[in-house]
Amino acid sequence: MEKNRSYKFWDRVSGWSKAESAANSVLVKCISSKFGILIKPDDTVLDFGCGTGTITLRIARNANKVCGVDISGGMLRRAQLNLKNQNIDNASFIKITTLDDMFHNDSFQIVTTFNVLQYIENRKALFQRFYKLLEPKGTLIVTVPCFGNTNSFSILLVKLLRFVRIMPETYYFSIDEIEKEITGAGLSIVESINLSDLPERLIVARKV
Image (cartoon, one colour):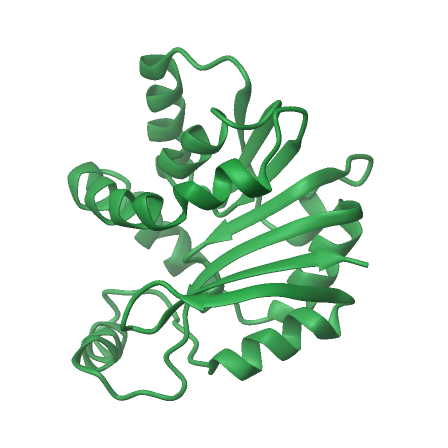
């Protein structure tokens, strides 16, 4: 039931293109300089939780190929429209429902996920899957709001929206907790910095 509600939420907000574009534009400005350093022209990239593909298509400028995956058909329909409008030929989008759907015979130099992990209950399994999908010395790039150690107005608002069931289930964890989950999957953190006062964290980790 909770999973179905989550699907419906993301399908419903897939039409909020202006709001999502505004939010993503801020994020892209913060991390775009990292793309040029971390993502090389011959890299194949998996973007997990790609939404409408705004950041996925930005990654495509630096990578050889990028594949965005998401649970929301509504989000992916808009991503396909954005792909067509931008005339990009090295990006694709796929709908998934479980971790088991994810590329059993493929591997990637880069895996990215932006502002998604706060909606994932079993992050341990997800990070283990990312580890398997990454090639040796492959890189995981994560941004995530770490609400665990703060009581800001933003968090109170999120809790209220969750209480009235406007938002899907949202999980709260500290920076230390998310970093331990990443390293527990066998990845080594090479960079971890704040992007905003939420605090929204950028974490870069490498398969060793």
